[in-house]
Image (cartoon, helix red, strand yellow):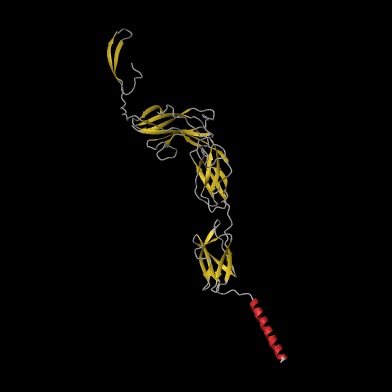
Amino acid sequence: MAKKFHLLKAASFLLIILFSVYQCKPTEKSDENKIIAFTVSHNDTDYSSTIAGTKITFSQKVPNGTTQVTIKTLTISDKASSDKNVGDLVNVGSENNIIITAEDGTTVNYSMVIYAKDAVIITKPTVNTGNIANITINGASISGNITNLGNSETIPEHGHVWGTTDNPTITGSGFSKSTLGSADKADFTTIISGLSENTTYYVRSYATNSAGTGYGTTKTFTTLQPAGFGTLSGGEQTNISEINAQSGTNFTVNITSKIGSLGSGTIVQYGHVYSNSVHGDNLILGTNNVLSTTLNNASGKFSKNTIGEFTSTLTNLTATTTFYVRPYITTTAGTAYGTQNTFDTPEETETPIASKPNVSTGTISGITVSGASINGTITALGTSNITAHG
């Protein structure tokens, strides 16, 4: 009897231990309070996540400067509920929590951090001022190169800026610029025109982005001094020294002009270009229907310190015609032109047939042993002056 009592007592004690162990076992999370899928959205871009345990992780970062994103999908277990809903906003850069509650009241707290891309600091672009070439009396060409975009995706404006004072800027007074539009890293060239002759200019490349304008090194160049002319002798009217008839239909005209300066080069030749057709104010050597005279300076008539007038003889000009004429001078620096003017040739004239003079013999008087007096009369001169008579 005592043995049986002890067995019952031991069994009761074992049941108490088993019940205590069961009571102390942690409550397992219910399968009815899980997040199955979760995505957020920003500016029509979706960002998906991976879920490991109670941690939600995003592999992509949202754009820099984004402060909040929108929950686009939130799929959870059946019969569970969430303290967040589709359309709710969640913060970027700090921890967010989503609490999922099962039907039996058990909860699971999910955490996540949505990160933004590292801040991109935009700096001014860097640019080089390239070579200066093709310098003329009123222009030049300048190259450049954009070497760094300053973390911009593109450069909205670039080019060159120039002026007659140092450190030209695109917003400074008295400066001019070329605007070549948007670009990436690239070489570029500006062709400058409309400059003043024999003038020093300062020029540099520039490129602009949202951070401002970057400039290249300032370089200088001087436009050429032209082989200059004064106005044609006689002012607005061309100085026609003489007009001579040839066979009554063609004429010879002597045109005189004056060299004002020889410029920076050594003189090679000079003369006049002329035409009977309209070319505006642009009679130039080598143009169709433009004739020219060429006076060689081999004799050294003109030098840098010896300047003055020269005369061209234009031949075989048709009668009753308006001609356009313009002086030119060619030096080793190039060709320059003077003021263009006009002149008109006279009407056509008839050349008379050559004829002898007419003369009549008059009376004879005063006859002596050794002589007499005889009268005579010239009645017509013919086609030329009388050079002898008797």
